[in-house]
Amino acid sequence: MEHIADTIRKLKKEKNAVILAHYYQNLEVQKVADYVGDSFGLAKEAMEAKEDIIVFCGVHFMAESAKILNPDKKVLLPVPSAGCPMADMVTRQDVLALKDRYPQAAAVCYVNSSAEVKGVCDIACTSSNAVKVVAGLPNRQIIFVPDQNLGSYVAGRLPEKEFIPFTGFCPTHHRITVQELLEAKKAHPGAPVLVHPECEKQVTDLADFAGSTKQIIDYTLESDQKEFIIGTEMGVVDYLKDIQPEKTYHVMSQRLICPDMKKTGLEEVLHVLRTEENEVVMEPQLIHDAYQCLTRMMELS
Ligand code: 13P
Ligand code: SF4
Image 1 (cartoon, protein in one colour):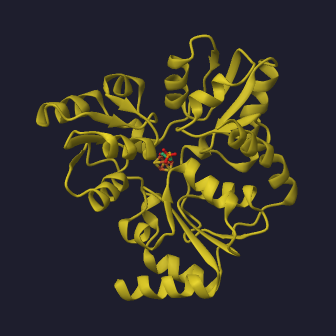
Image 2 (image 1 turned 180 degrees about the vertical axis):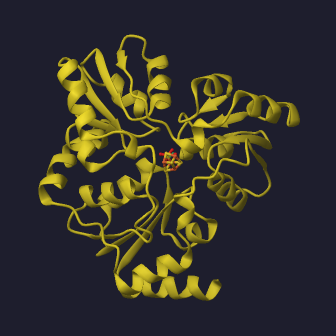
């Protein structure tokens, strides 16, 4: 494994490439990345990247956003089938129908959505900035796609807004139950419960903190507590054990694994660096349409 990692590091320099990885990636992949982050941090890094090639270790909508924000770069997604099932739950037609029905509403899309959807939305958001983004909009009515759980989390914090929710959800976070949370609390009394807002409202309501992957990580770094219950994908626990081994992390459920995020291994990273295959290719018009939606979010954050 170390041999592959060394080859990747060497090739990355030779080809003037940068490797970006999400916290949910396998730890071996996180270790060869130049930057590991949440969706917002990764989008910002991609937008500011100076290298010729961006190897995006994550899922498709993330690599697509990198291409939209920095279209002159070659963006490579090591495993093209690594998608986000939640992003596939909403279509451009769904958004257009909602806009027809609620003409006064602003259309907000979670960044976990396709470029086609972004192209017809007013602004994007991530889990780290969703409340700020929606609060900053002049419209009272808010169409929020695709995540029903992030939507209700934001709606709960902004009672002055009227939310028109959608039905999408993250299969990994949505399956976490209140019972699992209560069992984890019982097993580890006193440990704060930190969850992702993609969990159901009943779960988020019982947590001590809800936030993006980076915000969860920062909570543990800034806290005096020594033990935490983590309600997001396992990769965050792997990351935390690696950077802060003196503290203890209990994953709320063994089912907190995103199969798409776990498709990428070192072999796939090396393969795309060598061959430059699996490039994210998009029509210029699609990039143009989706650009505004993402850059407005960047400006408001
Ligand atoms: P973050 O922006 O919190 O990293 O979330 C990305 C994601 O896909 C969560 O499931
Ligand atoms: Fe999509 Fe959920 Fe996987 Fe995140 S964890 S990429 S929202 S399926």
